[in-house]
Amino acid sequence: MKALLIALVGLSLSASALADDTDADAQENIYASQLCHIVSGEQKTGDMQSYTEKMKSQLAASQSPSAMNKPSFNEETAQEVVNGWLELGEEERAKLRHDQQQCEQTVMTQFQQQD
Image 1 (cartoon, helix red, strand yellow):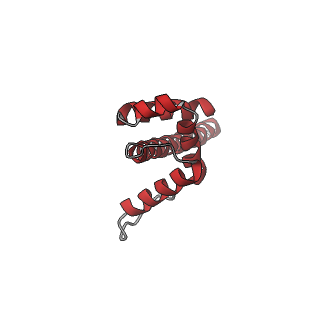
Image 2 (cartoon, rainbow, N blue to C red; image 1 turned 90 degrees about the vertical axis):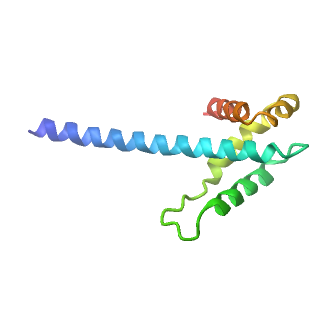
């Protein structure tokens, strides 16, 4: 009985950790999507601060004032995603500005390589 209880506690902790990872992955994907939307309308590359502020503003604008569960903005994660974009060469960024899906995939790949 004691072994079963220990196994159940371990399983619930694993499930909780997996759910946290899934939430973090979803957040990273949202930030990559936001960033790629922002850069699609620009002619020259911005900086970390401007991208982070624009992403934060977009998130706030997309939330209903009456929403019960408003996701908080994780500035550290957003900056890591932006850093993935800024690490790309200017020529590659110019190409990605015109392809939202490829932009998101490339930014996420860069982000994951930072970990």
